[in-house]
Image (cartoon, rainbow, N blue to C red; front, side, top):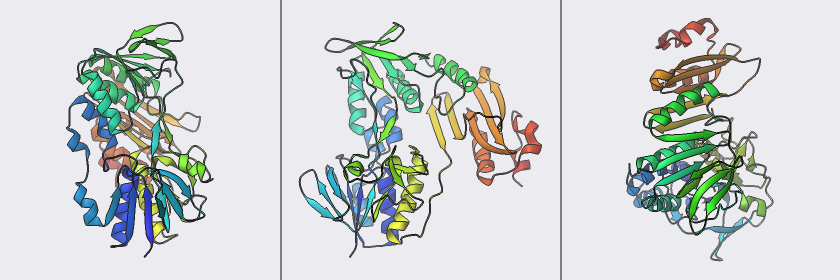
Length: 404
């Protein structure tokens, strides 16, 4: 019987395992996970920190579900070495594990910038449940928090700290918040909403040092400004966890390079999720991880049976009073793009649509939930909307006129 092995039990690893189990009931299927926990929802860690949900609510499946599916999950079982030539891996405890098909789903690591004092007590990154536990416990006894990084996760983390009663400042190196998912005009609306929540934002400043003695005291910018802090969270991006792949001499760029079948450069080794670089992109988003995992699983079971052609980039920020969805080429610039904007700062709303050749290729929707689904459908269908420019910018467009 063929043995399928998956390294990593995040959303990509578990999705792939479920797909394989459905396609090949009773197959010899194993997941090896470095963490001691079964799959949990990483996007909800900030809600756990804030106390909005209990830790038990993070876990998507009860432990018995895996056994019922025929998936053998090995927790606290980090993989130390991968040998593609021998079709074998070695666990940190020295145990050897053979495989016939292998999926790398090792995810990503939180990146901590090389800032002086970044290793002081009270400085954290947020990627794992253990990180969230440590932040939540530490936050109970402090008053001031600084988040370095004004991206999606940084703002969600800032909101969690604010919910716990901390005074919170967000420091972003770019000229405005969430530069990958929001333009300057939309960021101005969002910053106003955050001020109403009691969250201070500072943009265009480079964090130079985290000050303190035994614990954190403040964060200093290159221009000399200091922001008092008892707790600092670095939310400055993610990098693919490609250590095993590099050691095994697989092709690695920003992530483990895969083709349209999600195959790596080694025979019968696939990759999916935050560790994979597909079409030159490491997506770093859940929808891509799920789609890649399903394609990889299909090809592990029946090689060449499915292809991956990319995922529509879609990200969402959800904090009380501010729901932001960014789709496709949301911040792209160029003479070939028509940029349509509708701003309503008083009500905290903003809509931007980017059109190329009459088709929507990018969108920013802040507190415009009711319009998100139709805009996404128009993008996915490639609908020519050039005759409906005025309608697109109405306060409440009649989308049904474009859906026929």
